[in-house]
Amino acid sequence: MLNTTIGRFRLSGFVEGASLLILLFIAMPLKYMAGFPEAVTVVGSLHGFFFVVYVLVIGYTTLKIRWSFKWVFSALAVAFIPFGNLILDRYIKRSFPVQ
Image 1: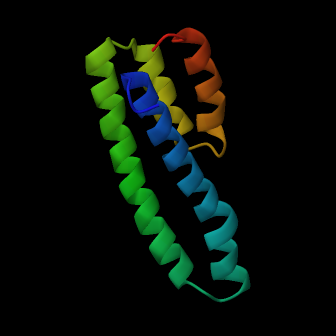
Image 2: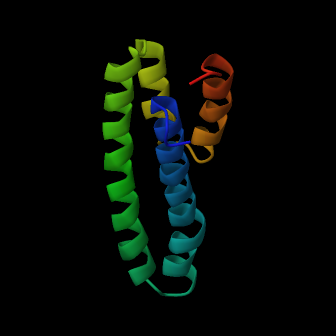
């Protein structure tokens, strides 16, 4: 997966998407239901780091394979939607099968 530009993008999307899900569905309930605010502090910081890396990988991918605005906008938009990266990944696999 790390051998191609699209593979690197897909991996960073999975990591960023998983960190968002962990933040929303594990850390936030721990903070508000169990009184454990440190969970959001740690997971939120990690998610922020992964988000910055994801945006940098979008830029790298755009320059490397000359992505159109549609792909760039979609990649940025799905970062804010739970399970969005999984949906985009299906379209990526369909549109870039060899890479």
